[in-house]
Image (tube, rainbow, N blue to C red):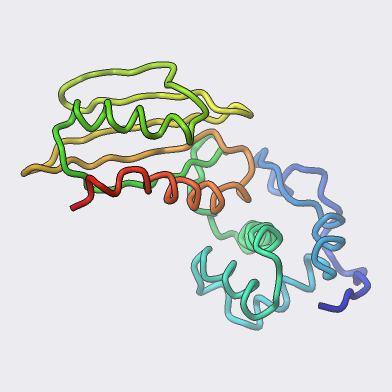
Length: 198
């Protein structure tokens, strides 16, 4: 993609905090422009012309990758900035301004059996064993403290029949750009449980 000069009509250069004063960090105009070859204002105009206000977060990001040939990491950053500018709430936003992502599967097994198995198998994704394990029969959980102040919670919820709902929630994400990569990582992490999916 040819690099274009930045126009003078962009938003003020970002300082890492939202213009709305919500305390969230964001990709600055300078970084966005140098990484994509277009200013935030140019991207917002292109996305408006493509009707992006009616699209989901994933659809906007995919549009940037497929139609505008933006690298996935930059597409995620442009998408988040666009949603912030247009007042669209990014997925996974928590009341404290951080972000969380949950991925779950219906897996075969008893609650405590699945808890023990999942703790063992997800340890590689988490970088080691959990800090806390609660072996409650109703909803057993395991909690990890991850790098950069992030957290990971494994939850097993019994359902009717021989299966349980097993979910991983990675929380305390400070940047909205982390949401999609974390979602993809959690989805891949569940690959270690495929023998329990049928």
